[in-house]
Figure 1 (tube, one colour):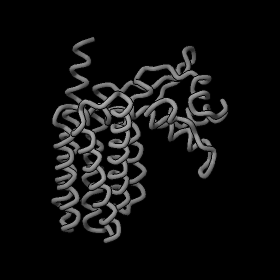
Figure 2 (cartoon, rainbow, N blue to C red; figure 1 turned 120 degrees about the horizontal axis):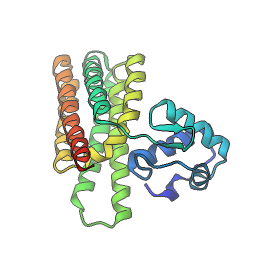
Figure 3 (cartoon, one colour; figure 1 turned 135 degrees about the vertical axis):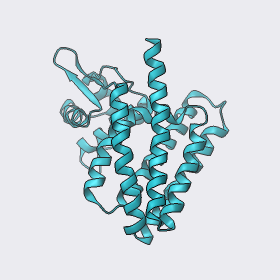
Length: 240
């Protein structure tokens, strides 16, 4: 994602929601980095909206844990600690395991088809990303943004297939926090290929209507994702 792509089209959904989505995407893609100060004037220029809309969006993102507001320094992109990461992935593993099991037992055929389509799109975007390592920086960012969006859509389908509104709400909150780590974890050597295979197993288990297998596949996927994220953060802490 480039700064120019943060421009908001003032149509459709409410302006505040559009601004929230754009800033959230900028954080997940690394355009806005952990610890970076968020200057209202700069955000207005980047998105093309006024200060009121920016402030409303920042309040929501603060509630989600994506940004933090310091009374003296203003808002900045939140940094996620090693302990927080461990806790987030532990809870996510439990909820996503339950979601996968519920999907296998309660999901409709139409929901399963959407999950298959989302998984296929993620695999396609993954292949695009790893097959062209020598692309220019802008092309790399576009490929990474498309990859993150495809994986996000897979998780949305997985959550919705549980047909449990509370699971959807809780996992959405967790995913919003983990977005700070997603771009990093998927670009670690070998992780993307493994992630594709793990997602294929989740889909196969749900399609087979095997609740226990789906729960195990989801749990394993989150455990492996957590291992990569935690290892990365441990290495960062050692360097500091």
